[in-house]
Image (cartoon, rainbow, N blue to C red; front, side, top):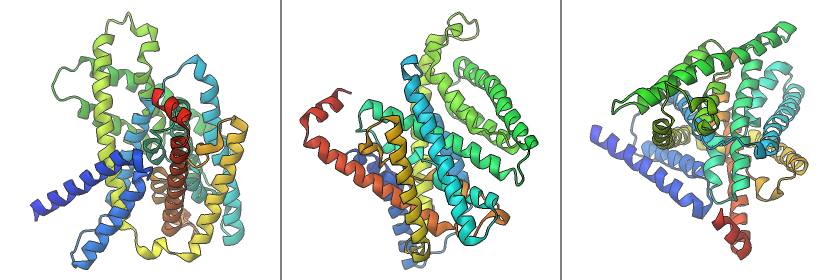
Length: 401
């Protein structure tokens, strides 16, 4: 039995790797194939009458690990230059404003049709309003550099701002000056503690000479994240700050004359650390979507009652996407289609306390929104490929990138 489990797990992860490799040509987001593969495995298990333990308890754990690693990996690509200030501002506003406006509109709709309190309606609406970096970033490799960079910044900031927004609403039922003051203090505190934690982790990365050190550092990062979260601090800020620090080490001039850090050694270690983080991210991300696909029931995908809501939410996402791109001046095609929902949306949905969940928002609706946004992205990127292939000038520019 042990050998059979190992064979199945290795085969599934190798298939996930094949999906990841071929997505650059097929333009099919690997999340779609992973969900389909997980769903198919469940049907096979049912066909043979096999009994498995409850795997749903592992989903939030994999989701949290995936979120940490994905934000860390994506922040490694965020190089900060003065020339990018305009793009960073547009990414920040593009991540924040559509999310907040769509969340409030959905909350009013949930309150109107279901008679729920506005605060609980808003809490349940937020997961649908966050762009998933776990789905978006791996799917845009063939786009021009400027567009890829915009998506990396936008989706990463959307994850972080979305979690901050969600946590603020989750921890407050009544909003007073005190609640805003406490939240501001928490953000400032996380910045201060993050700086100390980053210095410690960087020192370990530079000083430890043992042949095993990268995974212990990842364990420390996860531990610090979990401790911050236990104290209701916006711990995802720490993850992005650490990634940004390592990604922009060459711009921190004070480190050049540091007695504690050897920047030449540190840069080599950071390169190795990035590579290991990317591989660990792939394993956790693939495992999460495979497991989520395994837990999907057919009737949940085909649920006609939630389908109306799911289509309405996706239409709202597209409308705000059009407005955002028009204002920011970025090309409508193909960025309009790259606004998928995924890991972060599922994770926040699962973390809503039972007493604050509302009946309208359920698992079938979340599944349908995730699949619809992924399909829209898939078809949009496929159309981009056809357009690029038919225009040799565009093809040449992308190859030069």
